[in-house]
Amino acid sequence: MEVDMSILETLQPSRFLSFAIPNPDPTLNPSLASPLIRIAVLDSPIQPSSPLIPSVAAMIVPKHRESDWIFTTESGHLQLLLSSPNIQRLILIGQEQQPIINGSNSSSIYRRWIDPDSLNNLEISLKPLVIALSPKIYFRNVNLEVPFLCYEDNIVCSLVVEKCIGNFVGEMLVEDVEIEVSDQSREFRRRLRFKRMPNLVQTEIRIVPNKVSCLDSVDIGSNSIEFSPDLGLLVHVYLVPMVASLALIGSCIEKHVESGLRPKALCLGVGGGALVGFLKTQLDFEVVGVEVDEEVLRVARKYFGLEDGDLVQVHVGDGMEFMDRLAHGDVVGNIVPQFDVIMVDLDSDDPRNGVSAPPIEFFRRDVLLAARSVLRESGIFVINVIPRSRSYYEKLIHEFREVFPELYEINVGNVENFVLIAAKALPCSSSSSDSENKFLTKLRLAISGAYMDSINRIGDASN
Image (cartoon, rainbow, N blue to C red; front, side, top):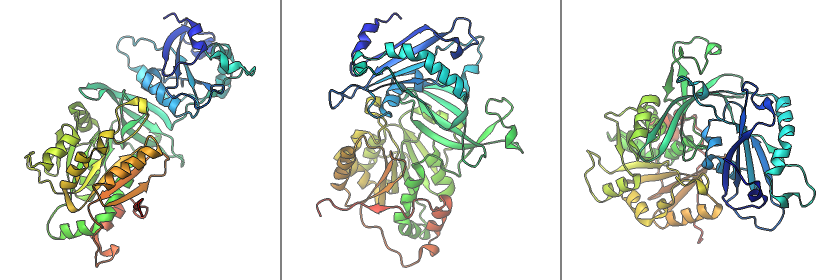
C-alpha cells in the first residue's frame, strides 16, 4: 500500500492507516533476508479540549507478538490509544507477519523477549520514521522527540490453542499462558478472547499440568504436556467480588437450604463458564446460564470445564430476552423463575466506547423490572460494571434505584471494575451468628473471605 505521507501532517479523528515498508534497520528481525515492518497510525476519536500541541507517541510491537489481535486490528490499536491518556496519535511499529509455511503453528507461540539495549538502539534507528509520521504542529516548539511507549503485561509465554468463529461474537481464540507471579512460582492460565475486543480477556481460569511432578519441566508449547481446568479458584479479578455479594443474603440462603431448597442462580453471559462452574462446585448452587453464541459454549465445554447436568442448564440466546420470557410466564425447560441471585457479566460490543460493561440496554426499565420479577423476595441482582465515565455510572445507579430500593457496591480496586448489587428488600436478618451459618462459612472458605466485608450501601441521593 502506497501512502501519501502528507495526509499525516494533520490530525483527523478516528483515522486509521496501516501499511508495510522496508525495514530501515535489520535488527528488527535479522532472520529475514528482506524484512518489512508494519506501520499502523491511529488518530484519537476524542477531540482535544484545547488547541494545544497534540500529544504523539510510538510503540514497538513486542517481538513474537506481531500476530496478536491487540496489535493487528483497529479495535486493538484503539484500546491501546485510549489507555494512554491525552495521546492524540499513536504510531505502532512491528514486524510484518510472515505466511505460515507447511501448516506450521510456530507463529502462534509467544515467549517474552527482553533486550533493553537492542530495544533502545531500535528506537534510535526508528526516530526519523516516527518524526515523519507525526503531525507538523507537533514540532511547533522545535520539539523533535516523540516518546516510545512500552507495552507491558504479565504474560511470559503463550500458545494459541484454537481459533474459531461464532455466529454472534465473530472470531475468537483460546490461548494457554504462563503469567508472571511475584513469588517466583509458576502459574498457568487459559484465556478466551474475542477479536472484536482483543484487549479484553473474556474468560480466564487456572489450569494445572497433568502428571507432572516438577513445574520446572513444564513448557506451554510442548505437545507432551496436557492441562486440566481448576474450577475451584476464580482468577478473573471481578468474579470474586461478584460471588462475595452473596454474603448480603447469606442468612436467607441458609434458611432456604435448611428447608430443603437448593440456592439458584441465573447467569447472563456464560463465556467460558468459570462463574457457572464455581457456583455449582464450590457453593452447591443450581445454575441457569444464558449465552448468546453457541460456538462460545462449545469452546467452554471443550477447554474450560463447563458441564451441563442436573445442576447446570445452559441456554443459547439473548440474556435480556430470556429473562423477559421468564418474567412473562413463558415455559423455558423446567425452570422455575425464583432465583436467589442474577449475575450479569456482559460487556459492550462496541470498541469505539472503550471497554465498558454492562451494555447500555441494561438501563431500560423493562429489563430491570423483568429481573426483579424473577428474583425471590430476598434475591439480589449483581452486575459487573466497567463505567465509561462517572456520569455513566451515576446514570446506571439512578435507573436501578427506580426499580430496586436497596443498592450496594463493591469497589474491585483495579480502577476499572465495580460490582453493583441491587436488592428487592433489606437483607434478611438472622438470629444466629455468622460462624453458625453454614452457607456463609462455605462462602468464606471458597473465596478466602475476600470482599465479604467490603460491601457498601449506596445512599439515596435525595437524602
